[in-house]
Length: 410
Image (cartoon, rainbow, N blue to C red; front, side, top):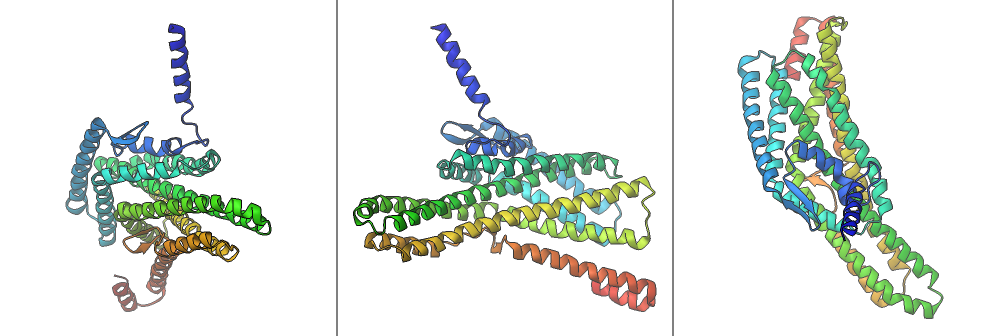
């Protein structure tokens, strides 16, 4: 009896140990394990996962409350330091205030929306439960790699922060809030990638259905036997599409404020970091000074981080939308190649359902696609061209022209 119990316990322990493996996910929990772990370490994962799914954990929720209170206190103190104790130029103060206020806003919104986000994760878990393990493993190569490499990249910036001549509280706040915003953005991107995989699964099933209709089209007996099964499968796919579309809308609502803050922070940080780099070039800094070299390294790494992050988010949203749009194309292809009236009627209903659901990943009417990335790059490039022209005029023209260009820039 005791040996059987010990065997059962060892089997259970072995099963739990195989629950998660890097780049080899088999279900939703193992796929999201690195993201959930990092969010928990940052105090922003007040849930526990059991056999039934997600539920609020009282100790973790208390921890999240304590963390967000400390974060707000640090934010207020940092704003006091940069606005009343530290002298800085107008662009520098604008850059600092926008970053600290928007990042603090992201932390507060993350805490407030803990309940709706839990329901969203539970819904995505239920929807993705029908995905094959091979698809989970393919997704894990992207999701695990970007989460771990991104965290490592941000942790490599920690020594740079400590070498910079800024207040200790500001250093602590920057490290924490940067990690928090990164993992919340990656959590959003992970959800988008899973929903994209669900859309792709529907596309694959519709293509298989289309192939069946083409194969059995000339064999009337086999075609009639398969038509009832195809009708049942089509209704199931239509139901899955409706659930996924509703989840996309839920995702847009819950993460909209966070995404808006991310877009604004990305735009301001890229713009001002380029601005500081041009100031270095304009002053002819040779980076012999250790402090100047450290600051220039920080600017370069920060530019890479924000540009890569917004590019990954836009790529995930754009490809997810493309998969959703492809469903409508395949439905019309199947509709044009089938003769069964019942299946044709069901396909027409499916087509209307697709038309009534806009599966774009957006934030408050701001669509996360290549247009957004192009707008950010175009705006930054225009601003940089104005600055470069200003520096040329400052060197080669009189002071009056330089002052006029300065007024235009400001």
